[in-house]
Length: 306
Image (cartoon, rainbow, N blue to C red; front, side, top):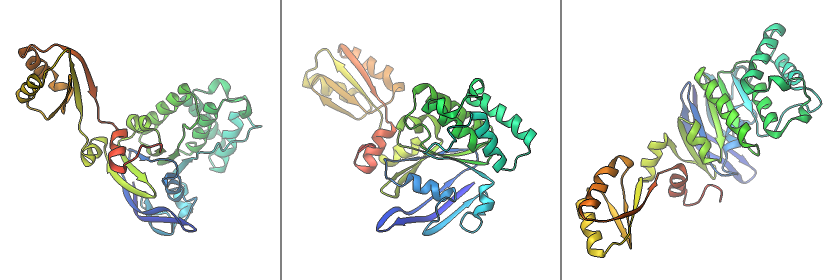
């Protein structure tokens, strides 16, 4: 659906996007994960024809974006970071205005507006002025405006910044529904949990370059991050700890009364049996899952919000 090759963009002496390449498959949610200033918005703006690249190629649904930007616009929807709505119009009037710009026939548009308002959970507030809405409600109307023309690809640039948990969860549900209907979604964020919930594949971007890309499992392998379980015992002598380590078929680290074992939860029963055989009393068990935060730290050497 989307092929990006050697894409670059500079602002004066700042290389905002530096020779990046990636492919997005039809019908997937693709995440661009990185800190503020990493190049996510610049990348989205080039993909959505707002910015022209300095170099490289973008193909969306077979269309060269640089050569045919107007044709490409018919196939894409854009949810920008900023709220792009008229405060003194109602939600319904805003959607009517944006829908007419897409040249959607009026009867079809009215039906579509009602359907989308139902999807985003704001049918009961459609006559209220946008200026009376909360930040989260405005974000949802922003999304509604971007999907009125049923785009094949939806670009979403940090769509949950500064909103309440209820609105965030509703936006997640809307994204998942649109994706189930076949829409390809490109999603930028600096929130780990959003990518973990929504995205099929992820590109980690930092300082304008893509550090790694793939599924979370593939990124975990690239970063060589392993899951582990920490066993804490009531008491544990050095000799008993070493004997325990020799009995289990996993890499482990002995640390006072704790043993950190490189394994997954499916290995728990056999390890507990060995601890019982050695008459060790388990005080606590903590599962340390490999997550995107640990992967990002391993690949970039810094925390995501540094």
